[in-house]
Length: 356
Image (cartoon, rainbow, N blue to C red):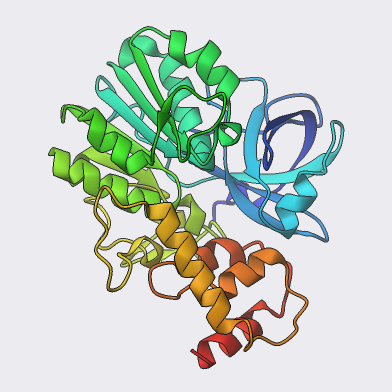
């Protein structure tokens, strides 16, 4: 019986910590002998573990063309990531992997014009592909990158984008933020709307990553522009839990994200995950302010349930889960429960649902 080497943790040493945004840090990690931990392909993931705290799956942000180290861009949003954000140079963390299939950079994508579309921390999985394309420029066509975030302070890797990507031959980069902000003279608006405005030719292969609701509406925008589902790839690594197909929590229809993905073209999945589903009873047009809609819905649910909730010692993320409408915004629950440090969360969720 062949032994699965991805199950054996490697001890990694943090050699550099870069603060990209107020809640995103990028960690550079090598093995204890100063070498790269293991080889990977763009889009694959690794399990980062802190004994006594927890473990979670993260995209490998660095390109496999980098032979010296690996990088992980991590957003602070729970107990484990809170701990990871406190790490300093010289500290150790265990890493297992690589997991998943990755993007087909040596097959389907080769020779194609590429369109990358990312929102917020969703740039992290795509950065490995973008840097791989840059390192093998002769194998790929024109590259367009659409990237947006809440504010200009939340744009991850903005220095690399401006100083390197924007200067790359046959690269066009389009940046946008959700709201007008002092000091920002670029585009203002949400990513799905911006994609519609740019009206890209359909001779490209698109790669998406970002919040589930963004992917939902970007996919619809691309379909309206004439793209076919087989031309559009995304990664569902957000749903990966154990990474080896045993826990059963990552299934999408008949497929397991950790075994069959996390990278899929949209014609490969039987159905979109529940967290990507259309908001029940609402028809959202391209011109609708999606973020305001989400915030308003959350606030209404907060008012409705606030008097019903017991006084539980829940963190702010757990409370967001509780105040989230279960139809349409359930993706928040799935995203946050994976890293929640409070064992009372399931009980609190049941309590909230019972009193709907």
